[in-house]
Amino acid sequence: MIVSKSSGMRLKDLGNLSVLQGDILIEELQNVVNVQEAMDARLMDKTGLKEIRLAWSKDFDGSRDKTLELDVLNALKPHENLSRLEIDHYGDAKFSNWIGDSGFFNLAKISFDFCKNCTSLPPLGKLPMLRELSIRGMDQVKVIGAEFYGSRGHGELPFPLLSSLMFGDMPNWEEWLAVAQEVGVIEFPQLCKFYIRRCPKLVSLSNILQLSLRELEVQSVRGVVLNHVHHLESLTQLRLTRIFGLTSFFKAFVQFPFTLENCEVIDCDDLVTLWPSDNTEQCLVNLQQMSIESCPQLLSLQEIDVLPHLRNLLIWSCGALELFPNIIARLDVLVIDNCPSLKMMSSLQNCSTTLKDLIINGWVNLNMTNLLGHGYSYSCLTRLYIYILVMVWSCFPMEVCLPQI
Image (cartoon, rainbow, N blue to C red):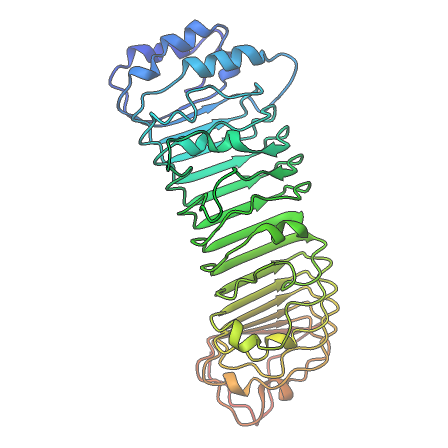
């Protein structure tokens, strides 16, 4: 429903809907003129409501009454059967006390979107069933500390079931302080997915033990942040985008995640090298896909030439890249797009029985005979695209036996 100041449905009209069930979206809450109207909605009595989204206007202008917005949020406390809560563009500096109340035993998903005036987070660590948490656009938050975890009973961990955590678009966030606990205590014992996006001032993270973490995405932050992500013993998916000051992928981590299966590096202007070539084969035995895009200072990828299980290699817009792996074994997918400086690459003969997709675009120095080898039948090839300068390759050396595709 859309709250109106004059005509149309009023917020208090929800009070007559005693059997309301499922989910509800209440928009334009800045139009509520007095708190009694929100109280009359009687959300607390609606036991069948499972999902609620409360949304104010995107415009944070001088006409909004922040104190009234807090009072309205207080009055819109739902029944404790709630399983999902979303709050968008809320205008006061703090949240209601009911948000983070451990009595909400079924609350599993929470998202706060662009509550720009909030200066601190509610005690969400007290929620016993919280599994997914998304926090975006809190412009005034500078430090996240003990208030985020909340106080729990003796021996009870905060966020006991949280599996997915995302922070995004927090331009003034600088520090995440750990809770003072015993050495070795796992603050997020079930965390599997962790995302930090567009937090350019962040320099310090809680040194949490992330033994269960499988997916990590870091975007538009300083490279020093990666030094605080420890114990990535289960990490399989890693995506790094616009990491400021990142010169070496390997050196960015105090403890490098050698369990990786999929790795993506995008728009890292300072990246010079990935990792040392010594013992790469033994350390990254699980890596199956490597994607690199728009890393203008990267000169060589020879360090990945002996990865035993690499199947997909995708390279885009690396203008300085000159040297490719000497050995590429059993690739399924090879994409090279807009890498004009490449000068050397061994034949794909080792992939002749496995290669399914081959896409080449903007490789000035490409020699098709050297690339594909002599006398090899690429029997699995199902997609082929090669475009160099203004010429589309539609014919190949007679020594190369390509399947009909």
